[in-house]
Length: 174
Image 1 (tube, rainbow, N blue to C red):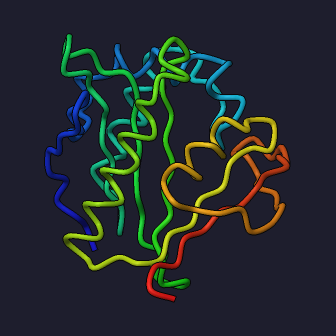
Image 2: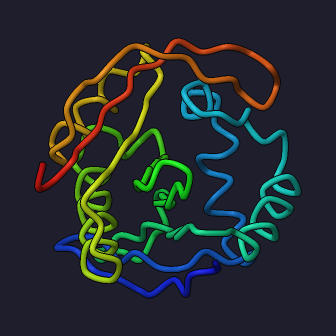
């Protein structure tokens, strides 16, 4: 199922659909090795790779994808998605944000709003997320969003590299 991605707000952010026209801003984090080292994807070598990725986002199934724009200046500083895992009957989320915006609470603020959206629209009660073990700040975001550590795990990046990770979950009403 394809979801219609609405524009959402938080105190400091506007969460909005991404477009190919956002490529220059998006390349600010997709082309940054400091951000990509924790992600499943590798850093985009140039802005054309970012444009190509943005073209594919219209075809996402069972997933909402937002760009995070600061209200104060309108600058797009990150993105995040929340996807329904039909096989597990729970929602998973992920996010990435410009390096110069790390540790400012933006990611937690945006993630809480994404979670609230799927609660409101879909009655979501089960969430899961994982982060690279080398990135404990991402685990703190998950904890601030109500998830708790479940287990150590691994994921495989698109380039085949195995990454040690930590999984978190939240099962509301259980």
